[in-house]
Length: 195
Image 1 (tube, rainbow, N blue to C red):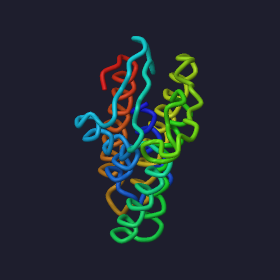
Image 2 (cartoon, helix red, strand yellow):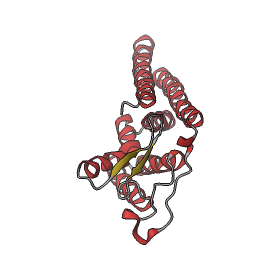
Image 3 (cartoon, rainbow, N blue to C red):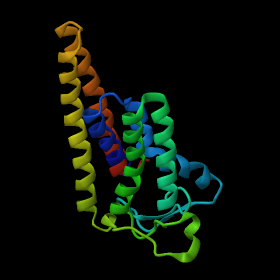
């Protein structure tokens, strides 16, 4: 669901233009960024159970646990608060946590509450990946809404800037088009399994 996470970042950017887009994009992927070194070290794994969309159990017991997601959200929020102010810090913290919420929707029950599944608590996951049409639709909607809102927001911001109308609108159209294209490409690579 990489594309869905990115789509949500574009939606948030449209509503919170003061927050840098790169910080929102990074925030939506922070749990996966934490997953990479743990995966490379063999601590966390991916078990493929088929060859279709979402056909995997992701054993990310440390990077994607509820407690870890909350901790990373708080840390990212505090760092952002210090750099860009309280409002942006709260937005970034929420954006980081949004990754866990979206994963909760699509993952099969493979998300622990505590890191390493300490205490053997039940694993979480609603499992929309079991129904590819539904999970792909949800992800495509996040991307589509992100593209539309980001594009619309960029154009609206250009109209309110002090830059000449033509130049500002041209930059806004270019920025909206580039972000839209990248979001659509991320969806295509998600659907093709090229992550």
